Image 1 (cartoon, helix red, strand yellow):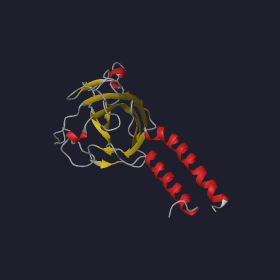
Image 2: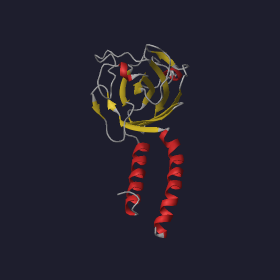
Image 3: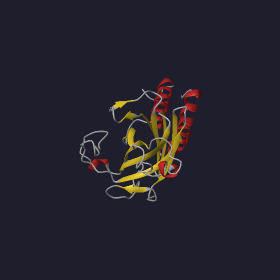
Image 4: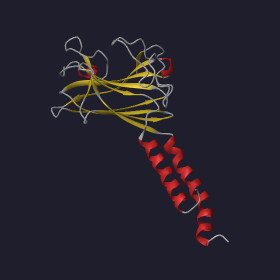
Amino acid sequence: MVPQRRWIWKSTLPLATALLAVSIGPMMATTVSTVPLIDIPAAAPLGAGSTSTIIREPGGVTINVHTDIEPGTYTVWLVIWNDPSRCINVGPPNCLPPPAGGPDIPDSLVFGSGQVVPSSEKGHFAAHLAVGDTSRVIGGRERAGLTNAMGAEIRVVLRSHGPVLADQLESQITTFEGGCDVNPCEDLQAGVHAPGAATVETIKLDRILRLLSRVASRIGLIP
């Protein structure tokens, strides 16, 4: 005869598992990766306070950049390889772009965001790019924008346009060459987001599944 407690667990566990699957579904459709920004001229990681984050969903990506940087005007650009398997490198990051000697021309170069960084030297940038949106594409091999939100390799690049120029401010924070006829412009920082990296959501899911396994083991449902 099956003890009452064991019978209750056996009868309710399938229901709990089904409810968990329903709740995990939306979570699995979203991934979040946060990487430290790299100082491009020095080819070295910056401090812990300088990061870029990409939230991926099937319909598009949301980008957030937080960094310590000198006051001035800046733009954020998305360098996109929709199919990293076509790139030369093996393993993430797969794609090695020019002009640093790499042969992999990105599929698209897309404007993300721009702003004036104040005297606090704290830069915060945010942008969203939907799959198929080509309205902010300015270059690349295909110029199709983002077509593979979950699998693309994306580099988030922070570009300096120098001090504020009153008569060119709008172009300084919205275009690739804004203000560059007067100020020196330079790509200063970058975050590399390869697909398939461990994410907040997959880590949470792994913890939940391990917890369920321990519970099932303790009540004798699995050896």
